[in-house]
Length: 348
Ligand SMILES: NC(=O)c1ccc[n+]([C@@H]2O[C@H](COP(=O)([O-])OP(=O)(O)OC[C@H]3O[C@@H](n4cnc5c(N)ncnc54)[C@H](O)[C@@H]3O)[C@@H](O)[C@H]2O)c1
Image (cartoon, rainbow, N blue to C red; front, side, top):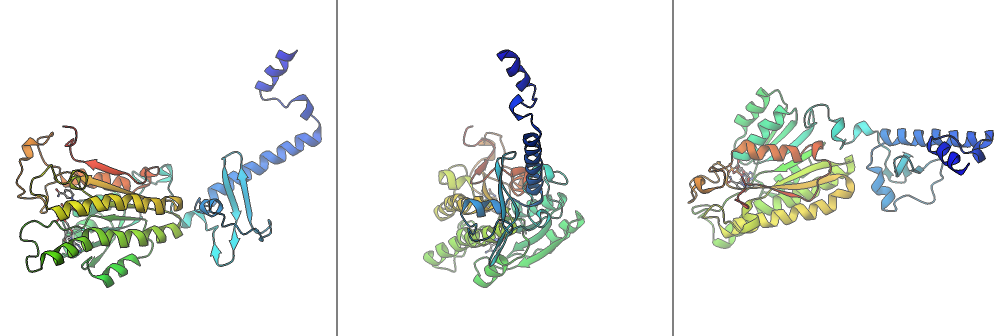
């Protein structure tokens, strides 16, 4: 008899003690509620969840106005409508950033997404611009150098682009970039490499300060601003380009200046710090640390590419792909990582 009962339960039938009509109705009502709450989860974005976790829910708001439930089906908080004085959650999902890779319309899911990209005029930044354009992103191209050529490339790929020509060491320019609206992803490729001859018009101290302003302060200011702005929109992606030199002090290619290597180590730390700030708001911050790549920055360095594990330097597209991936919903469960893209230099 016992065996038979267990068997019946396993088949999912209602146990005997629940067979009366009232309890069946209650069960049906509960199932309907749970389904409705799960539908609400689909309708309203998860940006509301941090509000729950951080205790931002006002106790005084009547339940009829602030419908926050714990869905047993999805094992998460679900919000139908949340009204907090001076604060509005409950924006429609479609207004917000969708982090679900499966929901991406195509490929990496960047179709129509606005990406702000620094260092877009040359090398890795330029390759990233054309790749993102091919993936359907709408670009805000930033560089101190002219951007007309890359803008034309991006438009030829069928994407929209606007340009911002200016110096990242210039505070008003930096603040104007930080105020850009509707940015889905921010990728920072711009940097200076202080090889011999770079800004010899300046004192050693002024050169160091300038390099740090461009390589570290600019991504710090922009990253910090975009964590907040993307967080308000429901999420986003930030990718900072570091360097293998920031990992090992510059051992792969000879001639890596000390201040450059130190600045890239700072960028890697910045990735982790920004990730801490952003992750609770669905803003995912990661880094890419390239080894030697064939760009104007690395040309002429005193080392033999044939001695590298793959027998060659990296190509710009081989760095652009990881950047694009980390800018996309395909990377929806990665934050605080710095991806080594160096052709196996650390293991070869
Ligand atoms: N090429 C390599 O071997 C290599 C290796 C490791 C890391 N990186 C990193 O990759 C990124 C891209 O480098 P790249 O090799 O394509 O170099 P690159 O010199 O070809 O491109 C750098 C771009 O940054 C822009 N830039 C420099 N200072 C600026 C400023 N003050 N304001 C605005 N824009 C500015 C430049 O005009 C240029 O277009 C950099 O962060 C670099 O440190 C490169």
